[in-house]
Length: 195
View 1 (spheres, rainbow, N blue to C red):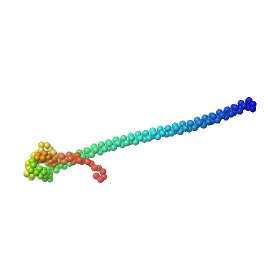
View 2 (cartoon, rainbow, N blue to C red; view 1 turned 180 degrees about the vertical axis):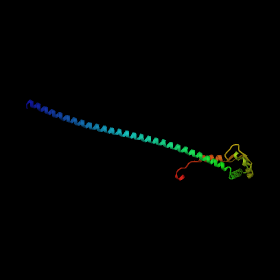
View 3 (cartoon, helix red, strand yellow; view 1 turned 90 degrees about the horizontal axis):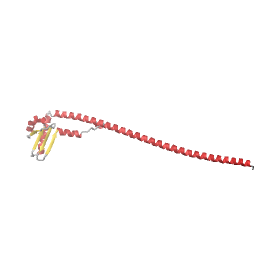
View 4 (cartoon, rainbow, N blue to C red; view 1 turned 90 degrees about the vertical axis):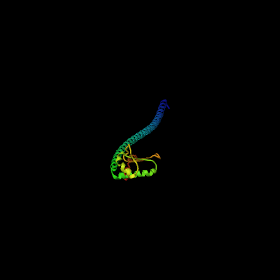
């Protein structure tokens, strides 16, 4: 083999080796590039999933807050309306009580209350009170029950009150206390079954 042939062979084998190395490097670069691309896609997908979940959670939270706020406003309006209706109802009840106090049935009720108080007191000391608005009924009530009756200094909307002095007991049959108890215990029961 001549020198020229040797050079040519050397050149060809060097070029072939360089091509193989370049091809291997390109293949390795492609594999690494694919790996980086897959990692980048996975990272981007995770980040977008996380961002989507975060935004979704924020929307749910904001929606729940808005819903809670609206429910609270509705409850306040319902409570306000119920209180208005309750006040209106008890104004009407008070008016009906005032009308009732002008009837003979009311006088019979006072007599019955006084007799029940007398029975409760037995032979003990007793002070009977009637409302100042009923002062015109005092004589007829004393005649019907045989008990001394005092007209109260304070209005209690009708009915009777009594103090059993021996036992330090107050018997309160006043319309004011009964109305206050009814008002305190009153509640609206809505719905189709309570209509």
